[in-house]
Image 1 (cartoon, rainbow, N blue to C red):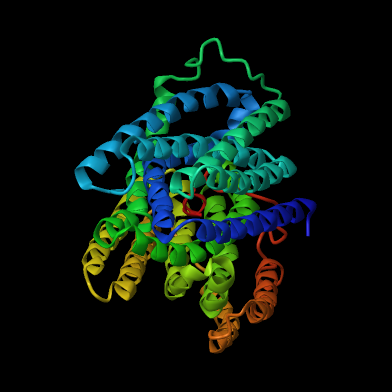
Image 2: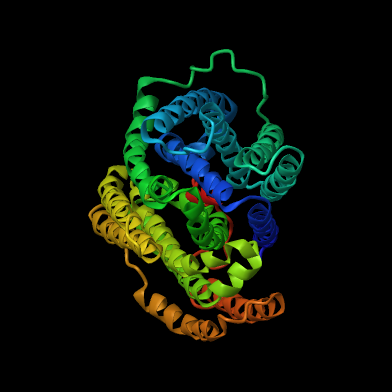
Length: 498
């Protein structure tokens, strides 16, 4: 195991522990309705990030190394800051309008609700831009330290705000925003020091802008905006529908159950992205068509088995996870955890396959698949929300949307670049993961002692399988000993959903 890999894994482990603690503390300090409001605010913020921020974040990923070589990162980030500020202002006004017209967030004050959404959009964007940029450029220790500190300070500040002010969504998320702000400043200083670029405002911030560069950004980002807003509809938009039709309290239970699965998925997906994506982006930036095709095949072979193992693990120990990760008043959310694990698997697999469009700079191909999945999800969730069986039908509606998206992405990207999925490896992973299902037999054993014992046993087998995938089952692949990589720089879904 390389030093960089050990640092990333250790940091992600600490971040996961803090994230688990945050979920437990939030569900203990806030009522189900307030927890539902937390997820509602995050859904609004994620919508703006997906539509306006994430596409440019992916473009930054694609160009960051070139900007580093030209010493133009700071001037370009200055321009990006102006853009993010405009998006945050738009989020403020749009949230107020949505509340008045649609009635979303009915129990929340208009302008306080909107200001919280805008602040989260702005500061989370910068935290998720500056900190991962350090990893993309090879500064692993700084990246890990700032990632852990963001989560840790967020937990501390949120607890202080809830205890000193009030047990509400505003206190909890204000603490998160404060932590993002502080760590973003520290990360900006580190980026300037490590790259040798001064923090002084550029004399002519628009010097790097010309018709050709603007056209390149628009050609890449505009199609992604269309794709990502439908991605938001599929993975986050259900919260607005559920809150309006079933209330914030029901949304709280649903979002916590799905959120447990999403949190575990975010840890695994983040590790995968931090380990494999930097090399992937580097290869597709400098290689020819065959090199990009090989890079895509290797990426899918390394990552999809990781997600298969996680799916089996989460389903098998969903009862124990719920017992340990959330306050007892949310234990009814256990019914949503297993559903959520399948929703997350479909989402992560679709993200991997969609990398084919990114590699060829033909992101228009992603609009139709995500549009199909997003519209199917929202329509099905809307219909299910009014049913007496909504506790089962809403998660099934989300799974249906995920299946539609995955199938459509595979079909569309095959027309852009055809790369082979290692089906034999996936089937092997499924067969070896199946023994985890035996732990379902112990789902009634949810005391802290039993939960810890069962999770430890299942976790050891989970880690053993992940070791086999990373270092034994794919020895012929380049990058079998991973070198490090990171996700779309700004506003990834997993981070907003946490």
